[in-house]
Amino acid sequence: MFHSDQGSQYTVFSFRQLLDSLNVVQSFSKKGYPFDNACCESFFKYLKKEEINRRTYHSLQDLQLSVFEYIEGFYNSKRPHGSLGMMTPNEKEELFWNQV
Image (cartoon, rainbow, N blue to C red; front, side):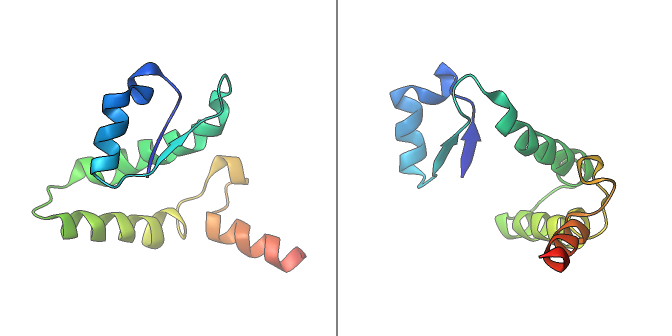
């Protein structure tokens, strides 16, 4: 999955061909509404800052495992989020399902 705004660098035919050749699905923000992209940008900012940029990977499997462990072992279960009232995503989801 490759998510971006609708900037010309992401919509040119040659870029679309590259994504197709790599079997990558492209996702866009709504035109003129960049706010739906903010949560993705925030997530990737912290993924890079807190995990990826701190390590060296020797294989794609190492990278995949690292990202999985970061998301499931830290980001969703231990890292509080300001937009969720300083709760973790897991806590917020549990609260939601307990109220339904």
